[in-house]
Image (tube, rainbow, N blue to C red; front, side, top):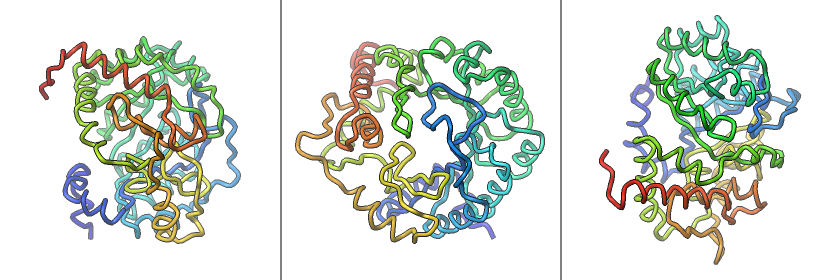
Length: 362
């Protein structure tokens, strides 16, 4: 029988249980990378462009991982990649996650969604699909993905998902190639009646390459793009107002939920604190979850900031203090990303200029 917890709305679960979850250090939401492979070759992607299939967990091994997560109290899993639908056994893995009562989210570019996959999602509905768009025009989409013909198929599948009533969100990455079409993509999402969001925080690849960073928007340009819609401005203003209270007296390197409420499992069965921070990684397939979670993960999570370490000069968004991004960019957990610092300062200035210090009504 389905438990009441499994049938509640996700936000309601979080609100009702967040204090217990934090106190008990329950891995409430876990990112599950089924593969690092993809049929597209997006210029900004954090995954290695030649990721091998060799060594990826089998269906049976993923079932073992899912059992360990369920026992630990995980409620939500997000199946991602690369593109998870590149796995020939995606349907079986998806159903294995559903069978264990997880709220299942799928991150995909949609171009690998076939009629059988549409039927799978119609019959066994996910909590939602999150589909990445890489441009409204074919020219921009192709420039980002470096694959001809994917644009039309992506948009066709998105419309078919909407027709079937499958829960859907659209998203994109704001970068030099897409900046002029971000709000065109948002308009398309509004036209078909689905939520849309974008993010411009591009980070180095997990193999150490800095190539994706050449597509970052200049900080002021990104901040202006974020603040140019009422909802975007409101989100920035809320962040700016909330951050000083959140930060007060908190000396931990980790200010987010990584290793406390959230985690990532990579295609090879290693547990990481988050999808950005890949070192260290812990063997979850062969290890006991609680031994790892309450041992080395907790020890890393509890590391305190060194004197003069990652500071918050502008008291803006908590995401400024991202140890994963700091490690990718500088090889240190406790060193602030210069780009994120500059973006945050630009966001703060955008809020001040547009609101003149007045609080924005919700």
